[in-house]
Length: 391
Length: 231
Image 1 (spheres, one colour):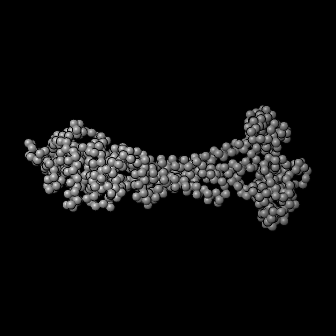
Image 2 (cartoon, rainbow over the protein chains, first blue to last red):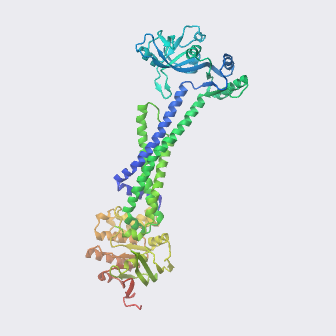
């Protein structure tokens, strides 16, 4: 008996009990749908995070002090001399409450203070909706204290966004608002609208921080990042005569890390979704056992006219696999539909990859074989006389 | 063609041993038309199951075309059933979801015949039983007599050496029954060995040789020419 014939026979058997076939398939449909949708969602989220990171400057290299006390002005000067550096800024960040003397809202707002140099906007994409960014003049600490603030800070303290020239109070220091950042919204990476950017030395003073912990550097291109980071580490190791004086991290490293975390998420979520696939498989086994019992007489007749064990086994196994495979197809179809809807709701790009489809369908076939095997073996082992005697 | 020697079949029924066949020896020659007659419980169904390779004897030897098949495995027996034996049952035993033609094709599918040849052979078999125009009908759309004729077509489509008919007229009215018997006679006259199992003496009279079985033993054998054979 060839496979085509077996498939035709199995198809006929399923068609003769459509409602039952669909209900049985439901478990597999949901299982495959869950697995493929989960994988697609995690994949989409990972892509989103990576592209967001890239948006913030894909050439970014962060140098952090590790075994040394502080990064000195001399170090900064030396690092700036290294090949391949487009821009450099010291960096300090801390959270604090801020308020306005003329606040509409009586209560203060929470803000993330970032102390940077005027080059910072060359390193990370800083878009202003009004006013100006910090200048070299501000770096020197010559001017009165100035700040560039996020829209959320402006809204909370003043109830509006055109707040240029207004005065802020941060830990008793007065700041004049010289720029307002473009609204970015809350992203997967956090809230970038609650930021306040100010000159590095001013931030150190306000925060009571005397050391320089981090440098933000923009490499001239993405290709040289790994050689640049090793050069930077080499400089510090030589200058301080130790190994591991500083650590460096780059966007490439961060995106790799995101990839690893997302892979883990994918495995975890698909394992959970896979449980529903197993439950679907148990449903298949259950209904196939019922089917074998119902068709005992048919099995007897087939055996009497010469069907051997493998022929009966194949017949029932193919029926089970056909059920799960069709369930898999429907599940994948649902995934396409669901991701199209989710894409609109969540506003991220979702892509059902060929790999995901193949995995989903393979699993559905595997479930059919695993859970169809026992009923099929049972059917094929029936004795022809016993089977014929049954009504 | 068939030699049974001291065939015994014992069942354990509720802890008690039942001797369904108690030392049956029988030889069936090629081209015979034989009836095995006995009341229910006499062991004739067991004998038919063993003759039809549906069951194996507890002891004794069964020579089919000179080969001892009493110890054959199930796959081997399935081959013999498929290629050498045609079955006709009292209850027709057609598959209800398949058309007449598909039912007749079934043994050829298990034989591994290609579809085109298979359909042709099945159509010829249906034509031989006078049901060519009913090929697409489902069993439920056919009368009892027609269903049994489809079953006969299914039995003869593989050109078997022997046809085993278990009460083939049992579920039929007398007219359809007579038609079925006529077909069996015709098959026999074309050279197929026919073994009829029945409790009905009237039906058995069509056969050339009658074997009576009672309590698992052969109690009468009229012999090939219709005369009492020597025991």
